Length: 228
Image 1 (spheres, helix red, strand yellow):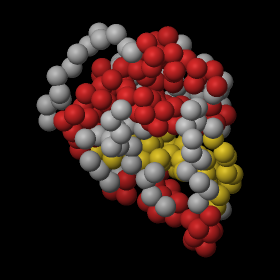
Image 2 (spheres, helix red, strand yellow; image 1 turned 135 degrees about the horizontal axis):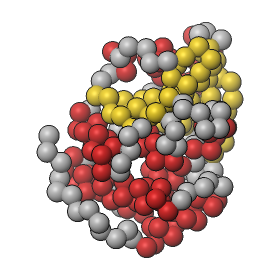
Image 3 (spheres, rainbow, N blue to C red; image 1 turned 45 degrees about the horizontal axis):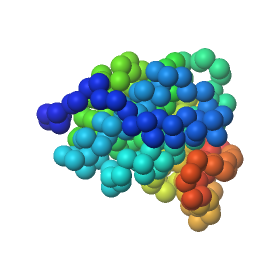
């Protein structure tokens, strides 16, 4: 698959850069200049590829900034607190689509080995391209159904709007090492899904963490799960 024409070196939109700085401060997240540049370049590439490959339903760059980048950035500190500082953690992002939150995690935490997993080849072709364009040697793209991959022994397996908690645990749980964690990014707290997971038995909700995504007027939470 040939990617769309690339236009490297285009200056990032000053408004987007300013909003990214403000969001980082709100999230108490240290984003250095190279990381900010990569985040904005990723956003620009997503817009360009979107014209041809329909990576995401959101088209407006300012909406993409909030609903994709800020949403993904909001989980960086919570995940970091679950991993020993500076540790070379392994992370799977299941149903990653255009690389959310996987690409963002790879940019923000270069010591983590991040694999984006999705069954749609064009989306993984985009993530593969981002690994090269953004110089992210810690980012991989796996074009596969998660249930077809051999167990990966990850520290964290995360998903964003991938499936119900029960389906997520059933399909992706075997990729978590014994003392690792499944983490689901959700909107409102999914009480019915939590109840269904409780009945399933193998995985249980350990914590429900509210997230505040800068400038997003919607509920967000992280559901942390561990083996019973």
